[in-house]
Image 1 (cartoon, helix red, strand yellow):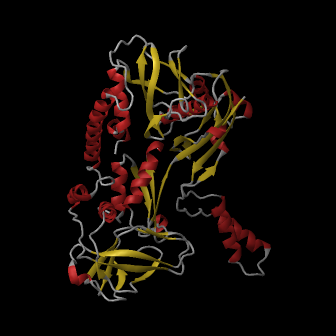
Image 2: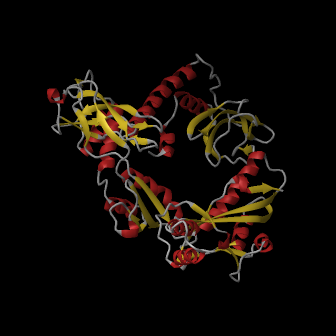
Length: 526
């Protein structure tokens, strides 16, 4: 849903009344002004006698600000002044001002409660506010998350789903953890269970999580679509199987018989079932994961799964995919992959990323508010992020350009780079730990009385043998060698401070993406 559109059609009754009353006496209504945390004073477009009201956005929602508590009218400045301790609009959002003009000569002056003008205005405002609410309801009725009642029935009918009535049996099924399982286990809504050796099917109606250390959990169920009526009534102990296994779940059972429902399926239950149907489309195969990655404009390069041969085989219940994708697309790709993966399968996306964190010393222009200083710091981070986002695979990040874009931010007087930290993604390449494991295994294979020559020969063989490939984890490995001088040699502290360095985007002959990892704590004001 579009939050900006919702704000446009959300007009509370009192706001409508204020607008009409202000317009009747020749005032200005809803004059738009963009809020900036750097400033407290906002001049009005026309000479004003007084401000009647201010509305805007706070935490993404419509808000009516309070005069004197949140804002004041400064007659000398002919503007709105925001009170330091009051509520303020979200940064870079538009607030709207209703105010009276100095040169207004309206014959209507009585706007008090009970006056003819006020009574008529409130009557009209009520009808207008009702229309706004009806428009808002019509808009929300088109989305699965906000539609209710009959409107929700129409929305989910696109998926071939209809609301289950009280004639569908309900019950509880207990899920038991396997002895070897230790972590959290998510049981999605819409999980299918079998009863009477597969003759009857049920579906879970709520998402539940079996927490670490918890041995069992009860989950509500509802008879599947085609098992309406008495056929859904099964005895205790008959629901004992899952249609698709869930990693970490050993068995399921219903300790009590299922019964016909006392009421129809609720809106929340219907939404949960519809979401489960959407997630189930094309699930559980490596090709389905590749499909959603390609649809998200990523490129699958390699995959490790339990069915792959040799070095590409991963542990049971895990799948790892190496993708070629712009860093800003990675969160979206991870989200759609997690929605598409089979229940209980741990899916990991990894990519050739070089992460860097510059530590900066910043001098700002005097006179900025506390919020203004925080905004400039964020703008510096955004400027460096924008530069980094413009780099392609294999493009080095240059220290001189980082300083240049940071200095271009308004109110930045001076900037220095104190340090740069770098990491690279773990793609499963052999490393020191694999070599240590090989040496220990070579020594363990020797008899206890082996002489020095035998031990030396075993260690030499282990060192000369190629280390086995490991499954990528995607974790970050610190690597200072990626910070290089302009001539390709390791960069010194002096070169880093002067910006005479690069973040290398080529690792072992492969082209990698440079990714900024920076937060406000990485910038210190001097």
